[in-house]
Structures are given as structure tokens and as C-alpha cells.
Image 1 (spheres, rainbow, N blue to C red):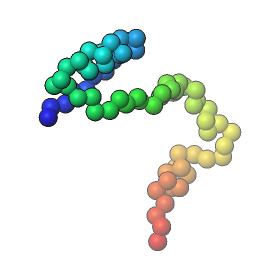
Image 2 (image 1 turned 45 degrees about the horizontal axis):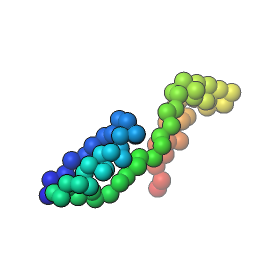
Image 3 (image 1 turned 90 degrees about the horizontal axis):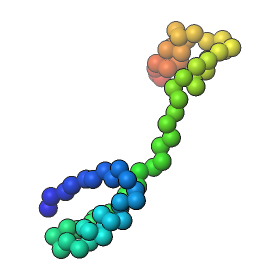
Image 4 (image 1 turned 60 degrees about the vertical axis):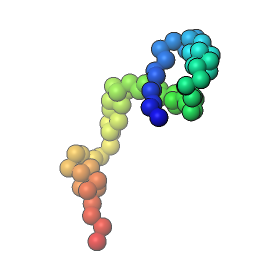
Length: 69
């Protein structure tokens, strides 16, 4: 069995596409999946995240790469 993945640009056309493919006896719709609504995050909104904290890059690396014995 061959598989094709389609990305639908216009949601209003999706029901038409399902109706059309349901009429074709050689096409099987396996699963209708929705992607999670991923919110776009503004990278620059994190500016100043470490502001007013007494930590520097060396200390962060030391804590991040700490090896347990």
C-alpha cells in the first residue's frame, strides 16, 4: 500500500477533500489527525531572563554538566 500525506492550506476545503476521497473505492482514509495548536513564541520576549540573578555562563555550564559519581 502506498501512502500520501497532504497538508491542507484552507480548512474550508477539507470537508470537500474528504467527501471526494470517500467516493474513490481505491482510497482508504486511515486516520484524521490534527496537529497540536503550536503557539508561535517570540524569541525576544525571553530577553532579560537571567537579569538580576547572580549567575554567569561558567556557573551555568558547571551545573548543567555536573557528573554524578
